[in-house]
Length: 220
Image 1 (cartoon, rainbow, N blue to C red):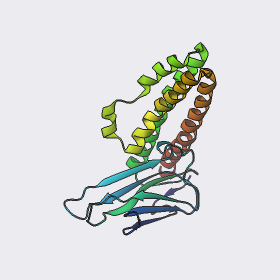
Image 2 (image 1 turned 30 degrees about the vertical axis):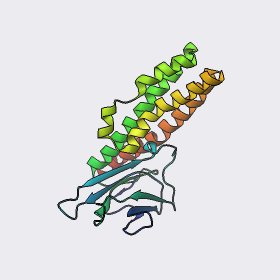
Image 3 (image 1 turned 120 degrees about the horizontal axis):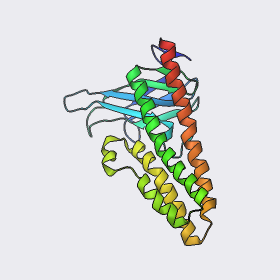
Image 4 (image 1 turned 60 degrees about the vertical axis):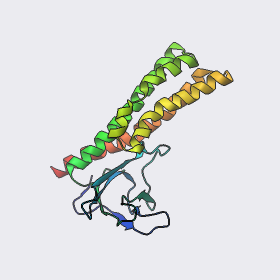
């Protein structure tokens, strides 16, 4: 697997005067991107350094990396009425296993993905237990509550990451409330949610884990 020492095969640009405000645009030229890190540098003493971490699992509703020929668009951090901070692509992980950036940022991507995948692991285990024991909708609802991360965790996570962490609990709760209200079989909905969670957990984690491991082997 290739490690890009200079820069990855993507186009990185900052649009300061877009219609909806300043934004960062990353366009994929070759292999789909599974994760990346954008870092902004302050232009004045009032600006702050920002590190934006993207990975497929944290984007609710997205089950695949950013495909070739497509772009990812992020809001560019800036002071209202002030200038846009200088930004650069600090690290990236491709679906093919290619990497770019220093080890500490690549490991941060891997750690973030593993943490998110663990939230799916816990939800999957509860659903499997419920199916084995033929739980009622009310029992699934009770099991979903402990799956929510503590609210103080929100301060240590990006909005996308925190949303991804609470999503398994919310999905189970929404489906089982519907089962109870509509008198639908709880097991049928539990199987559907279990299949969805397994797909969301496995695809990004396998890609990221393999990419990071390959990056270390390539550099040695």
